[in-house]
Image 1 (cartoon, rainbow, N blue to C red):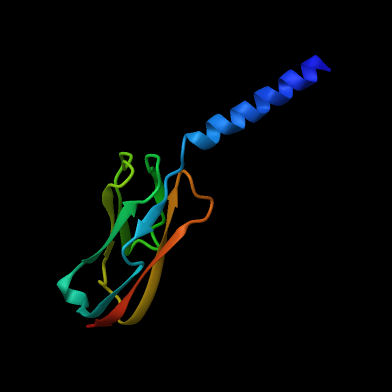
Image 2 (image 1 turned 30 degrees about the vertical axis):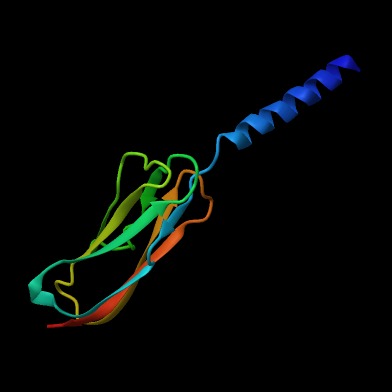
Length: 127
């Protein structure tokens, strides 16, 4: 009985320590960007999505999907972002060889979240 009680106390203490460590939280200033009308011949355009770590632990971005094609290139901080500090995710889109309306998205995965944050960008490409 004493062993069971001791194990129970250890488990409760472990959960208390884990919850005291805190959790990061990524909060974007905006999650969509409209490029408007762009010319395919003018080359790549970039959208910047500013964010803040609103949690109480360092924020680590694990990945940002590329949107499923070679026309989209994401970049993001490799180092952890301290609580209260800001960072940015940049999405560069190359309209070369494309025309018409587009509506694309990327997904941001952080170490603390199971759900990914969706960032969208859209516009119209003219030849």
